[in-house]
Length: 149
Image (cartoon, rainbow, N blue to C red; front, side):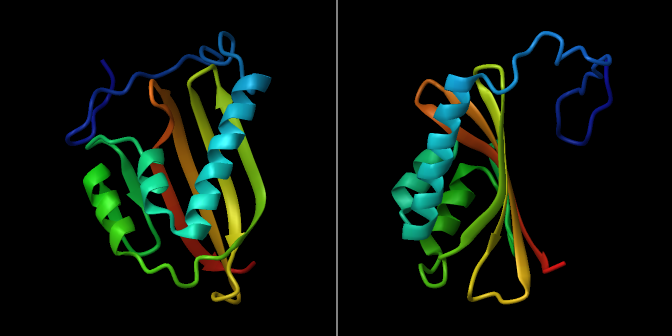
């Protein structure tokens, strides 16, 4: 079996092209669904719509969000962060958004963002989404900030 990291399941190595030879990438209707889910997320971020943001994160202890100043493990920590976060200064503009779907039930959304409240800084956001019976939800997210290149 594959290597393990402390507290994780065994990893399995993929042979070259094992996944891409059998998986459809960017199926048009699946991608349209994912783009709509991402747009719903972005609208909720700008409005600080905590109930919608919570609905878009998978309710599980395995869900992770690494933020600019916090590492959140599990839905409960993510929801607590959202509930305590100030709604000031959340407006932002997106650039270079890339959404890629893998098969019918997995996707990655990556984007750059800028905020007027953070001049000279460039935000980066990546999310892994999975389709569950209740719809598309984020299972892993990473947000970081760098100096504008």
